[in-house]
Image (cartoon, rainbow, N blue to C red; front, side):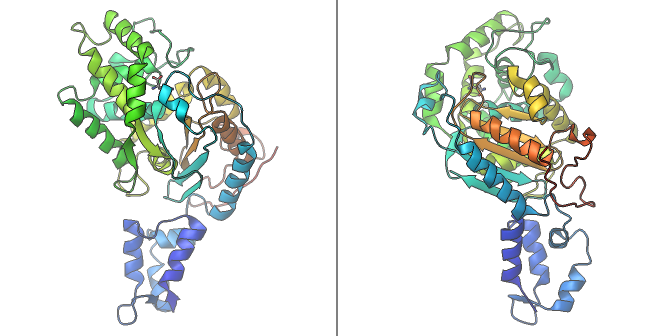
Length: 404
Ligand code: GLN
């Protein structure tokens, strides 16, 4: 006989899987031998149930899972975490007073694979404002609601070459891309203008939570950060007035205060490292949420979003980032850094000390080291001798450590 509790422990401790997840708990319930004690499973019955290749427990136990050697992989994540923790360079965001109150040394990392394997380390309970990390989701929300053509009638797709808050539009007087502030504010102008303010924010908050797997995904609101940014938000108001003058919001100009207000609210959406990592995992798996098993976003929209994150997500550091890490990413001035490893996982690093581009110093260093160690760059496959861990689910080599 097999102890169901022992099986749950293996799934949780060795593979990072939550046994209470709907598909896994259903598979566990099917294992239980009803004639006997509900905590046990008869061996023959277990073997019969494990024939089904779509059974999530079967997949997990036979290595057909994003990161089969999950314990070893997490150990490496922790090792890099401790190395990077020694770095104390950088400054807290200096133009949003409330962010100046953040504990400088707070540091956490979380990841969620496309099969829902989860791991978090450091100050994992700490909640932080998403800030710029909300932009990709805002872009996805607009794509889902209004379609690609409508969105890109308003916003371009090229890197701006400037900082995230540069007062700059492209040659057609449109925001360069959805990732910089001009683009994100314009997305706020598109998103459900027919709703009142509370419903509009509520709509977006539940959109985020849904992408992250539902009610277990922590999505809150940081009122002090919102008020603080609003009070000191001259640069973003300047961007909005500039865009209104250039006709970005249409000939009527629209309700500029409303657009900027929604932008500040969304930047103040608060998350934990883990809740943001589960949203990131849905992007890594092409819009299918690994925790709920539901297809939440159109794959083509996710592809567009990742392309935009790859070329523009790190603003005027996007080129060096592509060289050094080679993955779609988005950063926020709260110190959050979200990266997507397509077909493998979403990962978030949080540490509030920023470099001159507004990116978390430890976040950048952590990602550089992790990408190098596991050959995660989208171009690493052309480098002789490197192969990314678990290229496909059918082919399951153990995590290959390339230290060159
Ligand atoms: N709320 C921030 C701002 O507008 C967002 C920018 C960011 O996080 N990169 O300045």
